Amino acid sequence: MGVLNRDLIYAIADVLGTKVVYHHDGRRLTGKETREVNLSGLKIDVSCEIVSSLVTDDLVMVMVRSIGNLAMFIAVKEVKHTPIVDLHVLNIAKMDAVAGWLEKAKPVSVNEALRLLDKAVVKSFVKLKKNEWSSAA
Image (cartoon, rainbow, N blue to C red; front, side, top):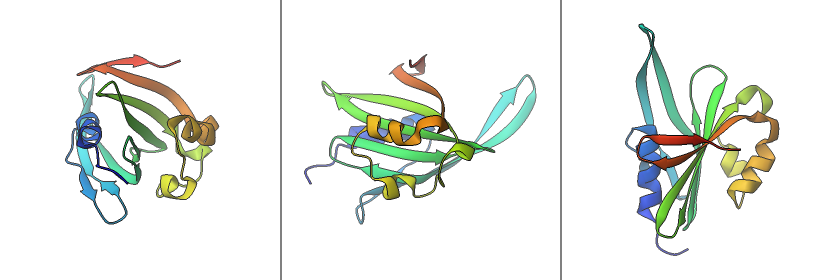
């Protein structure tokens, strides 16, 4: 494998708003954060933890366990020297265990991962720029 693209890992950390640790043994990521979500005055603590990761030279994919039956599949690739972030909200009741999923499935692309996740994908988003997202088709 070539040189690790740190910008891709920084993009994951930025999306999650947390410190992400890269482990050279096995080329994997870890990270955990609890954030407060304010719903019209009702404050709820939401935990996000990277429970699965797949890191290659030009693509970083992580599975993030969240609250209840929700998880996120986040993929970052570089296009013209710019990290492109895709975020997919998942219903974990419609998939195999989220922890270790990427290591077990070993998708070689984002499209393959989405094909394998199939009906577990609830909603998809793409990051346009800092703090700006668009719903993906």
